[in-house]
Image (cartoon, rainbow, N blue to C red; front, side, top):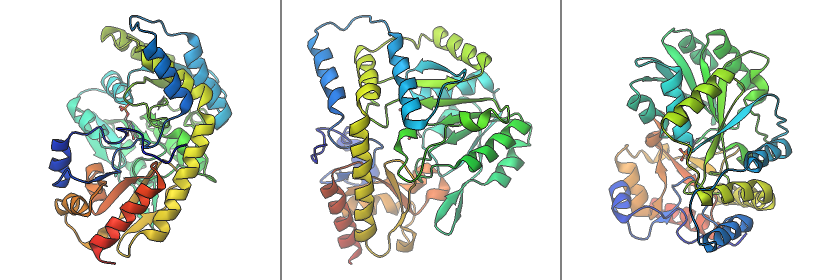
Length: 383
Ligand SMILES: Cc1ncc(COP(=O)(O)O)c(C=O)c1O
């Protein structure tokens, strides 16, 4: 893996947007977008180059080998041997979330979220005329936990029909354990709440943590569920690739497919087809290197973050959650302060009000960038 940032990676934001968020667009270290900022897997880059060189970009059918590549990967990487689940192609995680909210809940229903959590869920719930219902994570002794008592109380309310479970969790980096997920499955089964497990960060558990697919706890509770997967986060392919929606519920699969065909969500992107399969068939070594880079960069943060900024230890993802509350910056001030320090990080309040005073940094980047980010933060604080 080259230590150089990939051209354009994590920098695909126009200057006006940067200036709006951070008060400046100049000389910002781009560590705020959740994507790897390194040379991508050579097999993926190569297949895209050769697909571009082919000179025809028309209709292309999707061979079954593409979804097979995912199942092979899931078995090898996660010990997930398919037992009756179906994988349906979906243009993005957001598409899957939107379709399932529309199909499985009614206007006015509650959809439970566990903030601080990925920014796009809440606006999608609201845009579908459903109600975001908050079950904030607990922050105990520097570690985030699921509030299972809070979940139980909310799940028992008849209007709350769905839980969006971020697993592993962006932005706090928790890889939920088998027992935690089992608790979620038990509660949601009892109250007939559908679990939409967003597992898009599944491949990014950091040793010794291991990703537990929701399917492995679902079967013992008979809970209705679906999960999102795909190579977009792991391999930095969000701008080109499709994702998958996995479920073992025939009715859910059929409703998803019917809506996909109503909205014609089924068009193939010729580059996406090529990149998806190459990533899963040939990306293993690159991913292992990426995870080693992430572990090394976390070590850099541990030793170089200035007094006043604390690293919340992640179990996984290439995102690290920083606690800046000791700096006592208020919500609008924090992004400007980050801009003045020359580091574009995601301010924590973007992920819900519980994130105020925190910030998310992407650590899938060359170590000199992380070093420089820590140095800039330290010199702005003055230590
Ligand atoms: C947890 C999570 N879900 C979904 C997404 C976005 O997926 P998509 O771009 O396919 O909608 C992200 C992007 O960072 C994410 O972190």
